[in-house]
Length: 165
Image (cartoon, rainbow, N blue to C red):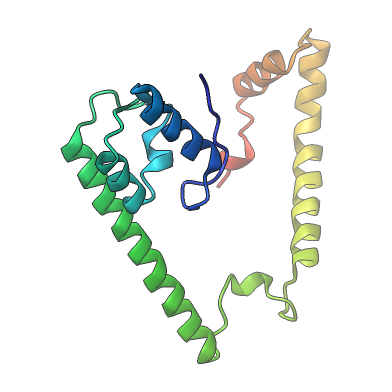
């Protein structure tokens, strides 16, 4: 029997997982989990799975044992605590009037998202105009596919936007 859970590992309401666990208890069978890290975000759940007496195997970590699960539960609990501390610190900063986020894209600041988009578009158009002669030459030389065009541009030393200075 197969159950597919699509809920986040952080949410407590996981109906498909609850059904799968009930089925395993009823039939005395092993629960097969695709990815343990999807379950490992909830320390209470991991420790509860052990206490429920349900045997399980994680496909991505088939040799996980009780010690591994215990360590993962502790890590999950620390992640939850870190998240709580971070959220509390952000809330405290907001209460003090600290402006959070990327200062370049705050509404009302000199550079808005629309202005940034216009700059990016202009940069892209300028770059396209620079590369177009090389693309046309490669096509005249017989390059048809994108892979062939990429090889032709590389052979001519045309750099990608991510490798430009």
